Image (cartoon, rainbow, N blue to C red):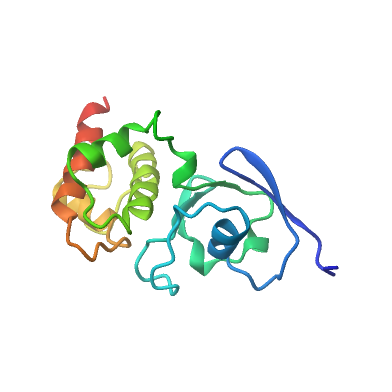
Length: 171
């Protein structure tokens, strides 16, 4: 029996409760307890982005946060963005542009890009935004915004092409 109060949050639209070890990462809880294995454990140090999920609309490395710290949060993993028969537009664009090779980083890339598109819609600048009022969505801008997600296979140009397709389709 745990002495800690339970952490309650929503994962992919479903209410969940965590009562385990307070030192356990969100990544391990998602993978081991909930069976959501789309979120990958890459470096386990917050350096590669393979474990990126969306918490309350913001992208985070799930290996760097504890499950209990997410009490009250809404968490979205790659499984919550689409299903094999109903993929999100970004997931379809990744397939169309071959935005993956081995696919290990792809769930984190897609979660990161999904949240990044929302950041763009809200007008958030990046470190390379020359004009803070009118952000020009160059490839350099997209690369900077996705720089927390590494692809060991080097599919970066295809990832950028997939994201660009979605940004150009959005009015």
